Every structure is written in C-alpha cells, then in structure tokens.
Length: 163
Image (cartoon, rainbow, N blue to C red; front, side):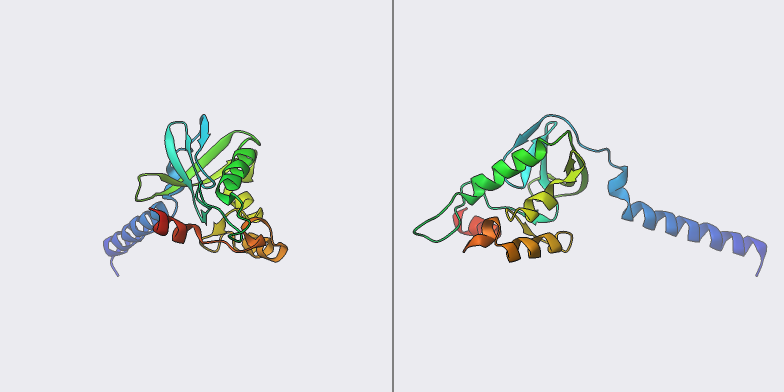
C-alpha cells in the first residue's frame, strides 16, 4: 500500500474515532448547571433559571396520592419534600444529558456529592426508568419504603389520566 493511502486511511480513522467519542461524551462538554434552586416536584426543578428534570427516574406528581382509597397519603408532596431535603445537602450541580419534549434539561444532578435521583429512588419516592437505579428500586421495594409500602399508580399513568 502506498504511503499516501495509508495516511489517508489513518486520518479517516482518527476522524471517525473523534466523531464517535464526541457523540458519546457530548454531555461532558456542556457546562454544568448551577445556581439558585426552586423545587417543583419530586423529579423536576428550576436551577439558575434553567428548567431541569432528573434523568432516569419518575416521581409521583405533586398532587398525586398513593395508598388505598380509604387511607390515601400525599406521595407527590412527600416526593417534593424529599427532593428539597436532598438538594439542601450542598450546592446543586447538574450535568445535562438530553432535552425533553417540554424543553427541560434532562440531567444527572448532585448535591453535596450525592446523586439526587439515586436518593429519590432509594427512599422509595421515585421509580427507576432505566437500569441506572434498578438496585436502589429493588431495595426500596423489598423494604416497602415510600410508594412501595402499598398500592400506587405509576406517575406516567397518573399524568395520562389527569391531564
């Protein structure tokens, strides 16, 4: 093979590898979101003027109740209050990974070094929507924490029925 052909192949390989790496790690190149926080519900808030939704979880809606009809409890408000408490552990920093249909920054967020979504699922106040927090959800279910203590409607089903 000629030297110029080898160089062309190497340049092409480097460009393809660079494009693949840029796509895979694009979220790391976006600056972290920080600032004053206002909690809306158990999985969304405003941070430094940016609307944010926690990646990988779905928490009960603010006005959603859980439990049996004769003894409902305000699981949506409990989820919001738990997120407020978790967020008060330190400065909140979020790494955007996507944007949802409502224009919110879907992000992985931490406060005081703790993953906020992981904390919500571990407390039984959010369901895991992927594999990232499956272990925490299984433990919360086993321990019957939060929403797992009794019957509840999945947040997505509750939204569909109430919107």
